[in-house]
Image (tube, rainbow, N blue to C red; front, side):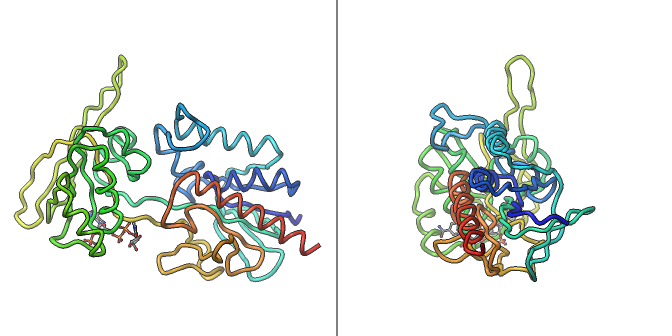
Length: 319
Ligand code: NDP
C-alpha cells in the first residue's frame, strides 16, 4: 500500500478548501467526496438554491454551482478526487489507514471534513419544496422572505434563534412546537416571546408541506403552507405560509470516527481551541463536523484552510 501525505475525507467547502491549500503546498492530497457520508458529495450546499452571503460573489450564485467551482479549483492544483465513501478508519497507529468498502489507503496525515446534516421532519412535501420555501438555515435563506409569513418548527435554542432572526425580514413568524414547553434556554425563550412578530402554536406537529408544484413556463414550485396536527385534540388544520424553517437539530457525520478520536456528547469532533488539531496527532478537522455553532460555508472554508495549514506544518515537523 502506498502511503499518501494527506487524505481528506469530505467534499463540502471545508474539504475542498483544505484540498486547495494542501495541493498548493505540494502534498498531492487524495480527497474522498463520499456518496452517502454527508448526504451527498458537495455537502449541504447542494441542497441550497441561492447563496448570497459568500464573500466575493456580489451577485450570489447557486449552491451546487458554487460547489462545482470549489471542486474545479481543488482539481486544478492536482487534488485527486475519489467518489467513494470512507466506511472505517484506523487512527491507532501511523501511517493511518482509511478504508472504502473495497480498498484501504494509508496516509501520514488525515483531514476530517465530513460535515453535518440538518435533521428534517421526514414529512411529505418537505424534500420537494427544499429551496422553494423549505429551509434549515435562516441565516442562509431568511433574506428571501421579506414581508412574508414563515413557520419555524422546533423548541430549542436554534428554533428561537431562527425565529428571532427571521423577524428582520418576515412580517410574521409562527413557531410550531410539538410539546407545550420549550427546550430553549430562558434568555433565548424570553427574547422570542417578547417579539411582537412571533407567535407560538403549541402541541403542534407538521404532517405535510403544502405547495404549488407547477414548474412549467417560467413558474417554479413554491410552498404555500402546511397541514398541521394538534396532538392534544387530534385536530388537523392547514396553515398558510410562504416559508418553513426546520430547526430540530443537526447531526455531525462522525459515526465512523467513534472510538478513534475524541467526540463531544453530541458527536462533534473536538478540536484544540484556535487550531484544527484533534485528539490524535496528525488528524485534523474542519467545517461543520467540528462546529455546531456557526455552520456557514465561509466558516467551513476557513477552518478547512486551517486544517490544511496545520497538517502541512505537522508533516514538515516530522521530516
Ligand atoms: P435541540 O436538540 O436543543 O432542540 C431540538 C428541538 O426540536 C426540541 O425542541 C425538539 O422538541 C424539537 N424537535 C425534534 N424533532 C422534532 C420533530 N420531528 N418535530 C418537531 N419538533 C422536533 O437542538 P437545537 O438545534 O435547537 O440546538 C442544538 C445545540 O446547539 C443546543 O445545545 C443549543 O443550546 C445549541 N445552540 C445554541 C445557540 C446559541 O447559544 N446561540 C443557538 C443554536 C443552538 P422536544 O423538546 O419535544 O424534544
